Amino acid sequence: LDSADLTGKKIVISAGATQEKIDPVRFITNHSTGKMGFALARAAMLRGGQVTLVAGHNSCEPITGIKTIDVSSADEMRSSIINESESADIIIMAAAVADFKPSAVSENKIKKKNLNDMSIALSKNPDILKELGEKFDDKKTIVGFAMETEDLIKNASEKCVNKNVDFIVANNLKTTGAGFGTDTNVASLIDRYGNISELPLMDKFELSNIILDKALSINKSK
Ligand code: PMT
Image 1 (spheres, protein in one colour):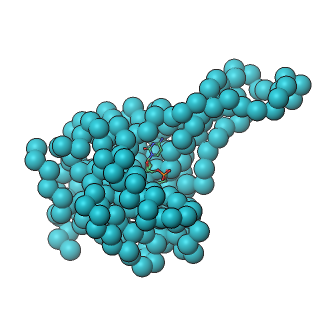
Image 2: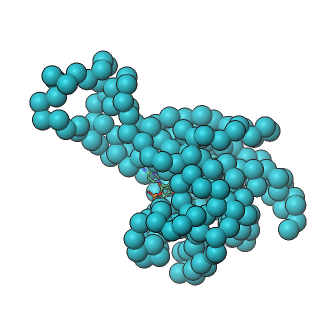
């Protein structure tokens, strides 16, 4: 491993979970702890990269020496990512972004007596990775993740094509040692040309270096 092979490159990485407010008390979120994205950020920094970490809610220790932007909702994550990506070489979306948010955020705590039908209207969040693929694909290396519970390779391959990204890191929540909260992951790298590399169980830090190796092997004309 050339320990400084990311020198001169800016890498934007997202990590953690977004939180979508329902009212001042409640929100919609997911189980991401940020471990995957923080491992990527640490690995990229140790290889000499200039890293910006856009961090949703997480349970990780801050990384000294890395520019970290804390965000809460998908909308906030989107604006920080798009902003930081203008000057980036490599963008990696490891965050678990909520696909939906409550259509309206109640200013006050929703009282039980006011809930007639006991349902919350939802609207779609922006698809940040898709927007990155539309805006920056010709100039920047874009890496997405796919979190699946079935048909991992098929669903992840579709995400790679639909979101127009260089490759997808696919992980299955149901595989032991993979996914949310663990220090390890089991992932397959699936690129836009249909190449599939199924990796064994390994530490998230080790996987991060393999992801960065593949990202570096992709040359985009600047
Ligand atoms: O944080 P940990 O506890 O370590 O867990 C790691 C992880 C499981 C969160 C990580 O490995 C992972 O799989 N991250 C992606 C989770 C996810 O949202 O997957 P998805 O298949 O729903 O989304 C596909 C891709 O689009 C992802 O790169 C996601 O960041 C992105 N996306 C999704 C929805 C959305 N509205 N905007 C997006 O940009």
